[in-house]
Image (cartoon, rainbow, N blue to C red):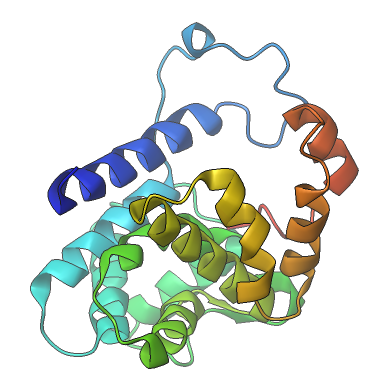
Length: 218
């Protein structure tokens, strides 16, 4: 598969998961979910900000975090971002009022959400020097989520996508992933997940729970 198709497949797959997953987000169980039960699947800010990231990267002017922050502000000002959680909403409001990305958004425990991870996929396709790679992921994550857990979640997503592009299986990638991550609660949860391979997704979700009450607050 060529690079163009890899990128399309990644973005389309994420958008489909977002559109159908948003129908059951926040529910205790998705046991009775079927694709047919979702009348009008709709993407959320996860996909919208992923597309805004793609748009920024295609511009190829200035630093990558600057480009992405400017794109986020533009999409927000034009009403193209919907359903944001508190961390993302604060960041986009700050950016739209002229704040630099280094000071925009929430900090601390309340920014330990998954919003950065949900939009980070396009960066897995960049040709970035290994020494700069993690700094770039941290900077782009911190546009909306200035928290180590949020950063490590985004880093994990990028590493897995890059592994899959190299032909590494998802199970093998997940098994090796903890060695690539800083010591965080995200890393601890991935270690636990790797010990639950014989469990159903539903059982594993109950055992692992949520990392933090704000985790689903994008």
